Every structure is written in C-alpha cells, then in structure tokens.
Length: 601
Image 1: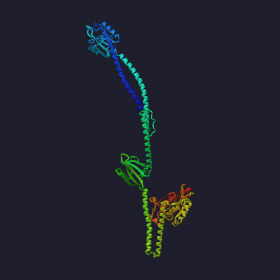
Image 2: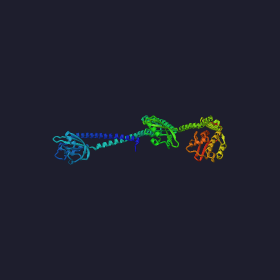
Image 3: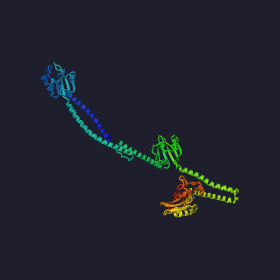
Image 4: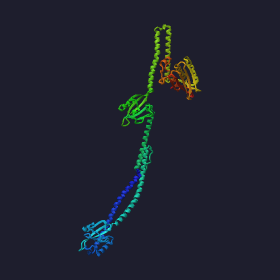
C-alpha cells in the first residue's frame, strides 16, 4: 500500500531525528567514558604518588618467599583503604601481595601491559578484564626501587563499573531528553507535514478534477509560499484550458452538425487509405447501415473503382481530382466525386466529397428527350402538311375527290400542331410560375358527375362502362374547377383510349380528413413497372405507335402532374400489365383560408 505524503513527511522527520540522536549518543558516550577513564587514571596516579611517598619497608620486598611479610601486608591494607586494589609485583612478574586475592593463587604478571610499561618507563596504564576477580579494571602501575633491594612494581586498580554506572546514568538522561525532543519535534513535524500534505492533496484533487473536465477554481491558501503560487498558477491554467476546450468543443459540435446535416457525403482518409471520418451522407450514398468506423480500410467500404483511383491519385501528389461514380442497378444514382489533398498533421491525407447529381443527369436526359420529342412531334405533321400541300400544288387540286381528302389531312395535322402548341404553352406557363388558380369550394360528387357526363359519349362509342364509387359523405375540396376537371378528364380520356371494348372504368374518392383522394381505375392494358416512374415526363409514351394512333401528344400526364401539385396534392399510379391501371391524385379539403385566388409559386 503506497504511503501518502503525510506519512512520508512524518517518517522523514522521524528518521532524520533518529539519525541525529544516534551519533550524538555514540560520541557523547565515548567522550564521557574517556573523561571518566582519564579521571580514574588521575586518581590512581595520585594514590600511587602517595604510596611512593610512603613506600613499604625494603625488608618486606624480599623475593625469597612468595608469602607476603606482615609489614608488606599491612602496607597494602593501608593503601587499599582508599578504595583501590593494590598489588605488589616483582620485576620477574611474581605477585608479592594483593589487597583482594591470595598472591599464591595468582599467576605470573610479567606479561601484563602495565607491568611491562612500568618496568620500562617508570609507570604504565591499561584498561582490561581481570581474570583473577573477573571484572573490568583501570590499572596504573609504578616502578619502585628501594635501596639494597631489587625493583618492584606497585600496581593500583579501580573497577570500571563506576565508569559504566556514570555512563549509563548519562545515557538514560540523554535518551530521556531525546525522547522528549523526539515527541515534541515529532508532533510539530506531524502537524507541519499534515498541513503540507493536506494542501498538496487538495492540489492533487484539483488536478484530477481538471483532468476529468471540472474546471472550478481551487481556493488558494494565503500562506505566501510556493504552494500558494502553484495554486494560483493551476487556477489560471484551468481557466485557460476551460476556455480552450469550450472553444474546441463548440467548433467540433458546429463541424459535426454541419457535416452531419450535409446531404453530400464527406469522408477523410489518411495516407494508408484508412478512414479517419465519414458522415451519415457518405454511408447513405454507399448504402451502409451506419458511418464506417475510424480505421477501416477504404477498400473494405468502397467498391467504386473510379473513387479509389481518384483517392490514390491525390495521395500520390495530385492536389485535386474530380470524377463521377454510379451506384445502384435498377435505380441508378449519379454522384460527382471531388477528392482534395489535406495535410492537417505530419502525415498527408485526402478529403472525399460526394455530391448527388442524379436529378441533374435526369434533367439533362429529360431535356435531351424533350428536344428530340418536340422535334419529332412537330416534324411528323409538318412533313404531312408539306407533302400534301406540294401534292395539291402539283396538280391534285384538279381532282375533286383527292383534293378534299388531302385538305382534310392537312386540317387534321394542323389541329394536332395546334393542340401540341397549346400544351407546350400551358407547360411553359407552369414552368414560369404564371399559372393562376381560382380556388373555390367544390363539391366532390358534383365535380365527378360532371366529368363523367363528358366522358360518357366516347366511352359508349367503345362499349365501355363508366361509373362512380363515392364512399360516404365526402367533404368539399378547395380547387379550381376548370383546372381540376382538366386533370380528371385527362385521366378518363387515357383510360378510355387504353381500355379494350367491353371494359370498365370506375372513378372513386375517399377522405382521410385533410385531403380527398381521387382514383381512376380501368381494366385496360396496364403499364410495365419499368415505365411507371417516367410516365409523368413530357412526351414519354409507353406504346408510341398506339399513342400517336389515338392522337395523343404525350404531354397530358405531365400537365396533370403540374396541376395537381399546384393544388397542393400529389399524383401516382399503380398498374400491372394486362390487369389495368389505377391513377390516384389528392386534393386538400376546403378550409376558409382557401377561399381566394392564388398563383402557383
């Protein structure tokens, strides 16, 4: 378990104090012991001087016998009264007398260091353990030479226990004072370290909060030390980080919102052809369930060779490459691809932008088809008119029978040109937003019945049965009667033209509360599924030969679509080949605000 700063500081102070007290105790003990030993030797030296001033009788120093004479024993006893041990030793190490032991039991002392020094120098000192009495002693030996007697050594000893007692007493006092000092300084150090560590922990907690995104400032202590300066600096840093992160977050959210709401597909790849970013539009264009994850290879996501080649060209050094890709099979979609080089970091990359140009391509195709169809539609009647006019001028005017027939053909094609011209003018008005609608309250049943009466005669001529199926009480609608009748009449005319003899045509209507849905169903030849999305385009015909045979211009459904959308509704078809068709269109229910004219914009 890791120690916190409080305990680390406490242990550091405690260890430092112990490290100081131990050397002090060691050196103080050695100094004190040395002083006590020096004082002991001084005391023994003084006693030795007194002893030399009153030496033992020279007759008692005879070495002929190992038994101490009474005079020598008395002198030893008198000297030992000072509290020291007195020993008399001959020059050859024989103990003549001792105040604490029997000389006859004592070994030869010639090898004792103090004896050797005394014989050689006159006196000798030593501190050692006494084997005779089994104690540590201080020894002081002095050489004494009596007249007409061999020299002897007078040795004086003091037990070292006295010095040990003094040293131990000093040690107790030292350790007691050290303990008191340790407690006092320890408490002070703990208080200081606790305060210091608490402040450091607060700074640590603050830095952790900043790392987690909490940039609230910390209250700086008014201590005036480095920690206060550090707290102020951290508060300033946190404030700057908060501002920077807020700015970056706002920019990121704005960029994400812009890229996420873009219809165009946007993606970023690195130099290794791995995706760094892709928006929802990019995923939808490539028909993915969700935007691909960052780090995926572009080859795993993209199957269009043109796009991959454009990206690789940019990664090889091209600043910008433009291309076009096609997706889908049954319903193809066209996309303009722009790949540009980008170097936001040390490594280069590329930005891919996919722009949907399906509508543009469709409009281009419609425009081309429209020009071709208009040219073709005008060319046929003009060629007929021109041919029959030239025939008449060439002499057919004199043939009454053929003259009338040729003129009727010229008149029929002229009327067809007029109808085509009128339809084109009508569409041009709608395209130019100059179609005015007189919206009024219109009864559904009356409107349907009036249109059925108009269609009844051509239907009867083809042996077709036309009827209405109006469900319940339908609300009135807001519509321009003439324009809406043009829509329904056009659908009825198409149903009559493309329904074989003996078939049935039904006009029905239903309401969902906000709008009324009209349906014209027939039992005609039907429309293939592949042609249904295009039947509302201008000049588009499913059966070109039959359309021209019945006199159609190919603009009726296109005009109907414009008129329905001008009313605020929509039109669509459901059909199966050989099973008939159902054309549906919706019209809003009448509301008071609809009782006014308005222009289509």
